[in-house]
Length: 279
Image 1 (tube, rainbow, N blue to C red):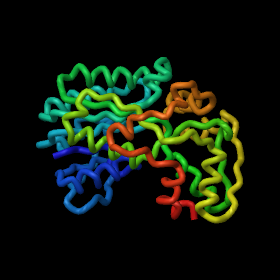
Image 2: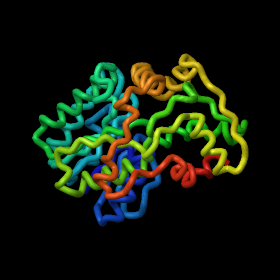
Image 3: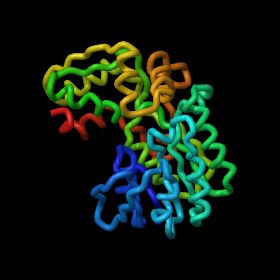
Image 4: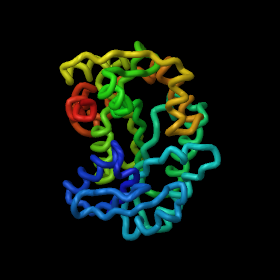
């Protein structure tokens, strides 16, 4: 049995599908009731209360750990989940971390994530760490404004980073959960190209076959929108990166291809698969 947290999200959903297609038994964990593929067990649990995860870990051999937003907040104790997993007999954990742990190690949310990585390394379990940069799926926050106004609003319109397709993250996670060769691996996951918000908007417009306007937000406007969903510290850390990415954050990582044997998917490929959200 493999337990997937965040199983209804942009990474967890394709990961659950990949594991079931590989013939694995999967327990999908999400905060609320959800529809999951046939044959997948679902457990509703809030990772901010780790004890609630205990039923999901019954007979589990491996865990994919994706932190919810509140587990990035000051005072959260995500390392408790590692201890609970170990006590439940889990032998392997694959942690979805962040590129910023290496590129911006002093950001408050990065310090906390580094501590979680360290706790995993010291646990005695088999482990792998995934450090993605920006997600292509963050563009879904623009879907409503594209549908209703034909417009995208985002900060730093002409500053790009190599955003990664969550489906690539999911496939790398599946490989790390299933293949002992990835034990102890730390993988930085990016897309194949640096792409700006303005260029992402152009890709969406091209896929729609109709114009989409770009409106540039101020940093304060962007933070106000982000803090509706994530802690302020995480919003600031993210905005620091997308405002002025450093050379390490602009680097195209070889790790997706190293694990999967193919190049990472480009942003326009992600758009093509999700264009219905923008219509």
